[in-house]
Length: 310
Image (tube, rainbow, N blue to C red; front, side, top):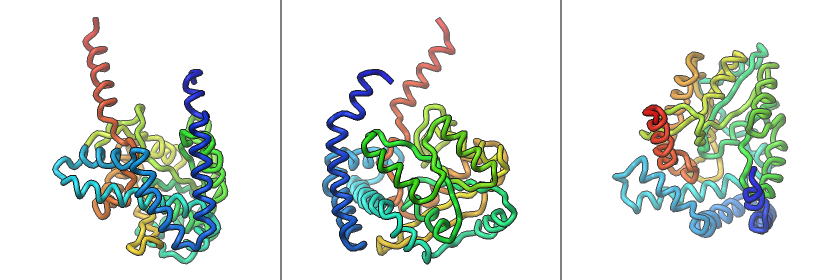
């Protein structure tokens, strides 16, 4: 990392932002559960999302995939996205509370019988999901029932915030690995030993395969499918779907995706996520820079120029 990048990450701005967020989290955790969810949902929707540019980014993404959607509808979805993001963050910072609530939450889906059979046989299971609803809710539901499920996380850009963000993920269920070659190898070893793990696949990766997501090309890593193939792990999509009350969840474990070509496996995982978004687009994290169309166009121009030669 260049010297300028080190200064940009971990400077006073990041430190101050982290302290503000820590204070807001502490305040929210001191309140009753429903009150804290309303507070954090309101704070992110009304304050943080507009100021940080998250609302605009969500609306731009919506316009990219659904250009005919009226602006008022895009704004309404962007507001629901910010609301869900605020609620999800504070839910996941209350690990004990999340485990207690998910212990009795509905756990359903066509994949449950095969998951239970794999566990009984000692066969590894790799769950895949996207940033939909609360993606930690299904893992918490299984952990609360005595299962041990590891994971791989993408570190936050703010190193001060990442410190307690990562610690919180470890508190839910170990082992948890940071994204990267070393982390991927750690998760691979855990899965190969008959363990269970979770991977979120709906993030942009310049090294990813060109898989359409909601009708637009979105480079997608195939590493989740490759790990499942290398370890003979059951490959299961799951989703933590927020209910209309804004508080409770359904943990849905879908039918396993058959092993085959890694790109085709990830295409199927993408289709499963698209189906959930079609049901309720406000539960997916449109704040992510998932497509980066300008960057993709630049890369295509460079590849085309390289093929043409001097």
